[in-house]
Image 1 (cartoon, rainbow, N blue to C red):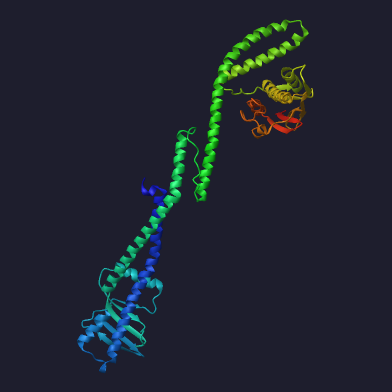
Image 2 (cartoon, rainbow, N blue to C red):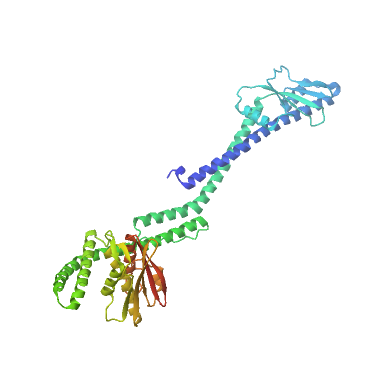
Length: 458
């Protein structure tokens, strides 16, 4: 992977760049200070040479000594102002014209930086005059002339050493940042990414990532969140796989069951002409139940899965639907009493088959809960008008819902209220209610029974 495209590589380049920028900010005043110190040193040496000359008899020295003093000071002339007079102390023969004058007593920081940068880029040799204050009490002002070439060479040499030192510091700092970042951040992230890629290829077999216990809170939080997400996803995939297998089994069963129900319909049609009053009363309900079963089987086969058909709403009398549910679900001579308190004048606009299945599932669940107690019980269906429509209530005096069912209410295969139950009844009822623009919810559940409330549009 190219260095600039990796996190650690970018941090390395960024660190080197930041350190170099910092060094530049330090480099400019540093070079200016070096140039100023160089010139001050020349002034100091020139002052010493001037004091040596002034200490001699008649202020005169031999030409060889004069040349040596000027050479040691690195200047070509020395002028000293004492009191109000200016005195030429030393001067090399053949002194050239001055190209630039610098007064170190009045130059500010920005001027010193500008002059130092000019030294770095000036190619031609020049002669400069430098003015400063004496440090040994030799007067009030000292002035020297000197060739600028030695100054340029010294400043360039100093700048080169500063540049090499800056590169060394930047490289070492960047390398340390690279190593630390690689170990503390990049490697844990690569581990997370590697697990994510492996999980993407085979989510059902790849185990969730195990938190590495990183001391970095962000990395630890990311690993924990990823492990939780992978665990939940594996559970969801297992449930989806189970549902897919169940769908295939349901399709096969529906195919054979449809044929059986067709035969039962043919036999039930013969009951329509019976003169027996019981048969005459039960026959139409039996035929209606067989019709619903055949329709459900056909719908399952057409869609390849248990997908509910769109509702066909029409205005229905709720009391009649509730009565049909009681006749179909609750045995007449059993220990469970079915009570229908739905007002006769109350109507709702809903799919008839869907509403029957909702109430049948709720009533059947209530009956099974009561039967599990081994004592008689009662299932009550009531209804009342609301602002937006109607609300039906299915209540029983059974033991109520267990904690497992409450935690996974309306979830298929997870919200079963009895041993061996699949938890599909409530899930189907909630789905049918939503298809008809309504809502199914648990209103109460305790040791005295359970109450479900179905809200439907008016």
